[in-house]
Length: 346
Ligand SMILES: NC(=O)c1ccc[n+]([C@@H]2O[C@H](COP(=O)([O-])OP(=O)(O)OC[C@H]3O[C@@H](n4cnc5c(N)ncnc54)[C@H](O)[C@@H]3O)[C@@H](O)[C@H]2O)c1
Ligand SMILES: O=C(O)C[C@H](O)C(=O)O
Image 1 (cartoon, rainbow, N blue to C red):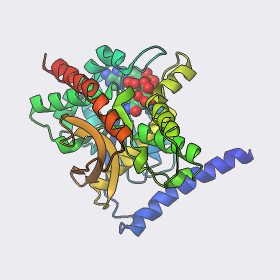
Image 2 (image 1 turned 45 degrees about the horizontal axis):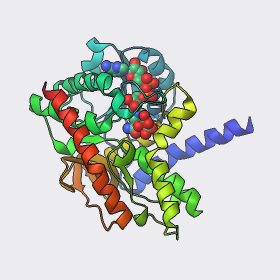
Image 3 (image 1 turned 120 degrees about the horizontal axis):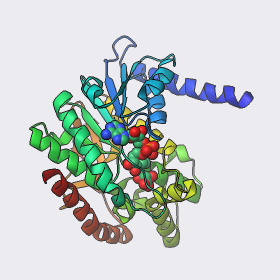
């Protein structure tokens, strides 16, 4: 009982803290702009807790929950929470247009998750088609929305989305994001544990892509600084790269990361909303169209603004270990990008 009330207190302080930080940034509670957020795949393992977290976000005025099944129940449940947003549930393709109309941010966790022994690329055959269809609808019903792509393999689904939008004549590279925040969340947690520093103070950029060795945490830039050995850095890097697999194996056939992903997805969507609302200096890592390397898409720090991507930031100084990791990841990332582009154009 005591535990329940302390959890409730934490949730309340989370929502209150966000509201008061908004007020400090110059928004009165009346002038927070209306923002519609749509979650596609909202009845799934990620979708449900993500719907909850977006319902707690005071920047959201309309929360639109779409799935091919079970969304009415999720929407009814979440809608009873006494926070700002109005919640609507949409089910089935014929309701997709309504779900998307007027959306400022569309978050996509629709698609199948991994089972033990699978790579993220093994999801391509099913998820590529799902993402393609959803992006065709986004191009039609909310072409100006910021798209937060969670569905795997992100290294291919983001290029698929870009091609679909190009074909529809709506592509704006500033508005398409592969969500790699979970890699950053993991890198922060693992680094704090190893370096014995307070986790809330930790910052670690993670660049590259979102699969195996394409995930490249830059622990040489981690703060607070700690004197970790090469062996420690190697172990931290591998654990971050294998974080998703660690969860898939622990869940033993019952899916992949959902709760930590919902948390990460909520952080990234919140950053997008803050950028849209003109909050300065909102920076998150994301897999975006990029000229930081020779690859057409690459995850790095991105400054978010009123139009989405305001600036794709460079990599900063890399250690020799990170330079080597960067060269090693390029062929795999390039071929996943090409696979997505080819699929979208066939
Ligand atoms: N980017 C990341 O860091 C990250 C992290 C974790 C999981 N993921 C990926 O997220 C995806 C979803 O994972 P999950 O655990 O929530 O899976 P899940 O199976 O629990 O949920 C997926 C949901 O998508 C829905 N869906 C299927 N086709 C759809 C369509 N055409 N339109 C709308 N909804 C549709 C399903 O009905 C289901 O409710 C997977 O591809 C997984 O690999 C990505
Ligand atoms: O590992 C997965 O398949 C899901 C996700 O990409 C993750 O990093 O947890």
